Amino acid sequence: MPGDNSRGAEEDVVIIGAGAAGIAAARRLQAIRPDLSILLLEAGGRLGGRAWSVGLPEAGDIALDLGCGWLHGARTNAWTAIADEVGLTVDHTPAPWNGGRRLQRDDAETHAAQQAIGAYFERLESHEGDDTDLAMLEPGNAWNGQIRAIGTYITGAELERSSVVDYTRYDPGPGPDWRVREGYGTLISRYGRPVPARLGVEVTRIDHSHAGRIDIETNQGELSARAVLVTVSTNVLAAGKIAFDPPLPEKIEAASRLPLGLADKLFLRLANQQALPADTHMLGSISRAATGTYQLRPFGAPVVEAYFAGDLAHDLERAGKEAAFAFAGDELAAAFGADIRKQLSVAAMSAWAAAPHIGGSYSYAEPGASDLRGVLAAPHDERIFFAGEACSRARYSTAHGAYETGVTAADLIAGSFPKNP
Image (cartoon, rainbow, N blue to C red):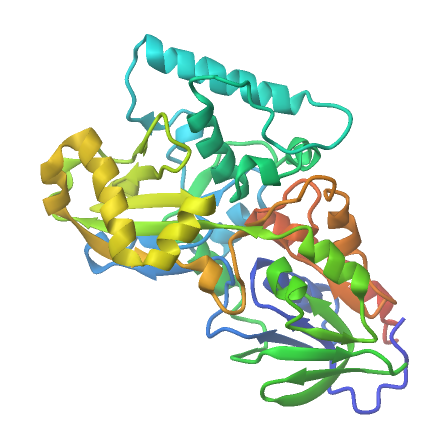
């Protein structure tokens, strides 16, 4: 329990990281412990973390989500109700994987691919025993490229790097998956507005050697608190960007074995929106693992959302917007003819691997590391707490998984403080 000797502790609770988990924790603490002082510190220049929406003038009120975009498990996803609470619009158009429109042939080859993909993921779901890599591919299967592509979209990393046990534990909750018309990033940042926050504050050291306070060193000076909640990404923790004194090696080890995969988005303007069907999904290539997936005219807007994951995303991010545009143009031209390139131009592109205070998109577990999610989430000494999507056993990689871990941490923090009479 935080000591009652709080001399020099300027805040009761300091939360590090203003993404979904940090904002959820802060709002929960405000609701259940209004007697506690709370300060949210964010190294970047905005609220939201890996949720980030940008506007496009020709798209009207529709925002482009450079980070998370789908309300997975929407019926029980906490953000669905919060969207209504803060005055945003939840769009119920079915996702491609929930029966939404797809651009694909209805022939024997397509059915064979669907059967092979379904059999592969059923095999994963029913896997028991030792944790192995996620590959488990049948040698020589003609659809292994497409299976690899889908697997990479799921984890943000190539199949061989990921834990089967972790995959089988994933449960986003009952579907379907919906979207926020004004943007998931808009939703999370708007929910964070009532929280006292300081942007551009990079935490470099957490000194928890004193009984009555925790000293926090930042690029803008020092402050102290009675309890600290750390919600930064696993890549930030694993890189040692925040030093703990005394060290917390079990947290660094857990973070290093729960690294962030990479998924980047490229948004393309469409000059003549009639050139492509509305809110329709397509896969760039049915044979290659290194392929994009495309949402054509989301919400009917004159835009194409291209999505790249894993090694391909790293390669295109390093090469830059023009290289990504050329890659996407080739895949779209293969489906719609060479003239489609003349209709397209770059509107926006994410670069999550290069984001200095994040370093990737969402966590996956290396083989044998799934249980480390619990190790990462466990409080230390009832004074240092941890939250974020990587701390979620079943809803990792999602914004509502991050939300739930933030609320859980807030409840633990609240219980660690004596209540004022």
